[in-house]
Image 1: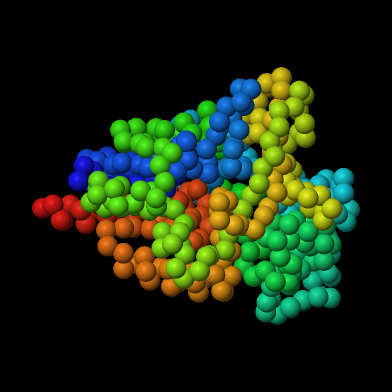
Image 2: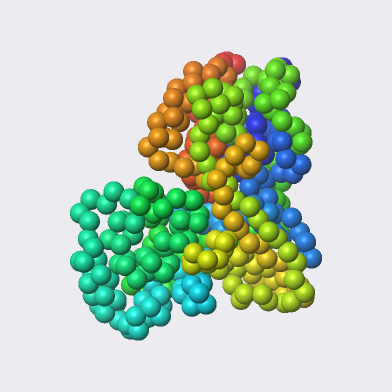
Length: 373
């Protein structure tokens, strides 16, 4: 064996684990089936603009230790996520706040906004929401649900809101202030120079093999290291023997435009049913770009199928039950740790990816040190 750890996946989880292991004097081989580092947070420079190849990623956290950690590998700008929604040409601020309520109803005070929401809620209130539609109406009433939530969410998940679990909508903040800051986190920004540069810094010192499909070369790669950190899909690792977990995938149409400014904002969500894409990203606005051209990406949500990139786990009861069976197999797998969004079949924000990777590394390093004492 040539390495202490074989790390499958050069995304954020794998990079953080590798960095922590190497800082403790351990050797790492990192493999990835893609031709580049950084996984889904990969950014590539086109026309001087750092393009988020796999969708927009805005770093935000309330964890100072995580913020200090990432700032050790990149300088972050002061970008604040303030998306807007386009509903048939009407523009609304997100998250739902006083600017949204003023545009929707003409109200100017929090009391008036709360009264209008309460009036709409009272007519449709559900004591124990059983689905996303009931939960959304309980939160913001019928007007905002119909214009800004329903069609966007159904496009995103490919299912009627009445068939989606209620917990999904709990991620959306509702504020009675004139504040368009979506995340409301203590620390927020985009790494200057893009996320690829950030990950490259974390992986400095590791041996890296790109264009390498671990599952196709598993015996030979496993022989190179004492432990495996696997960040790919957990069901794929076991060759889908219990059936395939469901994911949502995303398709991007990216184009360079010979204009300085296409939409005036980094993120515009299209919340009507007729527009086939969910949102348009204008990448230069993440870093306050002044380039003479601009690059936009239209995002189309789609059901995942083999060969597509899995993006969002569909964490309904049936999939969670299936994942529990796969987790039992994973827990019994010798010398392998399953981690990250795909390895654990759960949605993670970037700061949570870092937290869990650090926690896993701490446990692993303690184990490996005990083995070698």
